[in-house]
Amino acid sequence: MPEPLKNLLHEALVGDMADRLAAHAPSFDKAHFVKLATDGLVALELMERAALIRDALFVTLPEDFSDAAAILKASLPASGKPGLTGWMLLPINQFIAARGLDHFELGLDLLKALTPHFTAEFGIRPFIHRDQRRALAIISGWVDDPDQHVRRLASEGTRPRLPWAMRLTQLVRNPAPILPILSALMDDPEDYVRRSVANSLNDIAKDHPDMVAAFIAGQIEDASPERRRLLKHASRTLLKNGHAQALANFGFGSAASLACELRLLNGEVMFGEGLDFAIRVTNGGGAAQSVMIDYAIHHVKADGSLSPKVFKCKTIALAPGQSQAIERRHAIRPITTRRYYPGEHRIAIIVNGAESASESFVLRMPSMDAG
Image (cartoon, rainbow, N blue to C red; front, side, top):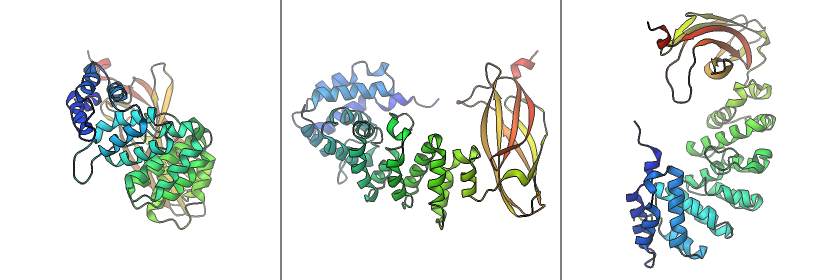
């Protein structure tokens, strides 16, 4: 079994934090900090542990945020010397987000300094929530920073729907203010940064599909291979949903002239095995076609209804009148993100965003067939 996430914050780490803070603040009460930060720690989950350590910092760091910020910044690693790093900085994020909002520039500057040693994407979000215009004006200046972690923070920290983080409801409603940041980072030399840009655009596409499709249409002409990969990854939700402009952005035309046949090689599947199926796609039109083939498994839920999940299959090019056959196996085995139920499921083939063929199959559970 993997180690529980909560154990990333533990008593020994608290002791190390105390030592590294005291090295830059002789008056820092290490013993009091450790006592407060470890009292009941083992019974708590990860974010609760972080909050307990944050609360201990509230008591033991100077009440004046400027003085506290100076200690924290001095306690970061520098010139090969150890300092606050890794998971120690999760409660520091929380401390800055709580105490630094009334010291706007100083708080954001400290988070910028912190991010090369952990991440500050959670810490900057309360600043954006407090004063979006002011925060984005500062964060926009990070897109040219020499540190890739700072540049990534500009895109990742402003994602409207960043997982596990405060939702930025203003940006969910109107993401236009962050598009200049994403544009500036689109050709970043680091794939690490470009992936963040793609994920942010994909977030936005869930609420504003037409906006993102139009934005990508304006960015794709003469795009480098790296930018094109970014834009396609950013369009993944739109392409799965068959958004016409998104499909056209990548050369996928209407499915009207494409015929699809589906054949199941096993109509009953035992849980733990797989569904085998064959597809044949034919271009019945008079022009060559780029063809994106996906498939959706419509899983049975506890109440008997069906819930689809789309999977990538293959992208091909077909000349007029040309056909191509494809065989696939879709594994149906235990995963942590889904509970399977026996009964009649369905597979649907999606060609250039349009459902083009479907068949039902039966999933059986081993326990049902025993005895």
